[in-house]
Length: 440
Ligand code: HSE
Image 1 (cartoon, protein in one colour):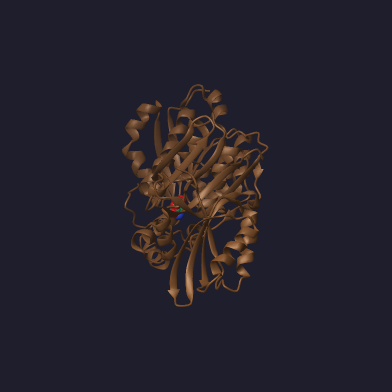
Image 2 (image 1 turned 60 degrees about the horizontal axis):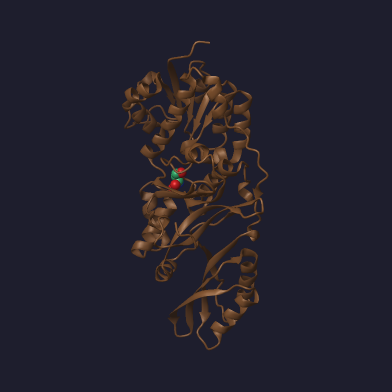
């Protein structure tokens, strides 16, 4: 069969990302064509509202309000799914793959929930599915794991995968502001997802962690089986205690291969990280990911995790990859290399109780003799060892107490907290988060 020299691209969704893709593909078409040895034609885009005024102009006849028109068009080779959501997006994606089209997706929730089905359908129909833009915006994390670091087994991947929560934590830390005040600004700037829980309760980062877990360890983790904690309980006081202890607080997605257990702990946690680490310097809406492999050691990627241009950059990188497959005369050979093959794995998700970590506790306690001894005794009873302690008077009868611990199994921590909650001298439910004892 003769190879095509022009590939037709259809965009499902012409919002912020869709317009970015259109704009940058047009601007870079000559360069891309030279590199790929064929041309890319932006054939059509779909949108819910044809009358909307947009900053990127597109000929009227290339815009449709029917995404199926694109998916069912036999002339379209590459479909970019940029509409989000998991219902219509799933149907459109599967239909395109069933017809052997290549699909490029930025939809982390869709891949997290239906990745297995999507990859199975792609394999059955010898179609390609690319998803670089689904995790960490413009940072090429998918390619890095799948290609650049393919020789590695990964002991630890951890990072900031949600820009909005990082923006909020950064301003809380730098300006001493409460979360609600910064959240109001983040809303005004358009940073917060329509479903705010995705950013504030860790679910957006969890979706991305599920995708990275699949790439690194070859299985789809059930998001419901993960420990997912958000940032809502972090106070300016925590920020200032963390600073005094030499840490910053960041919302981290953590994918840890628990040594010799075949278990992978996947979770999202607000975490104290040493101030001198690279990750601690990743501020505002930026994302940063540390990947530790057994061959390459630790690799660190940092960049823009969201926004029109960064996301468009990742989508276009997938379009270029797809194009080099489809335009290549050795298509079949390469296709096998690129198809999302299942990875043989015996790994499974770890029980959160199997995880060990150092911890930060914040407590409100009575200010009277013997309180510290009682708290230390409760921790010792569960073999949790104290690393440091800070205390600040709240009024003449009450103190805010912060204790950091050495590494301990989470199961012991849970028991210690139950114990602390029962003490008369503890006035409110203790708040605790993890401390990352890594130097990156
Ligand atoms: N809400 C996401 C974030 C957008 O803040 O990172 C990019 O996935």
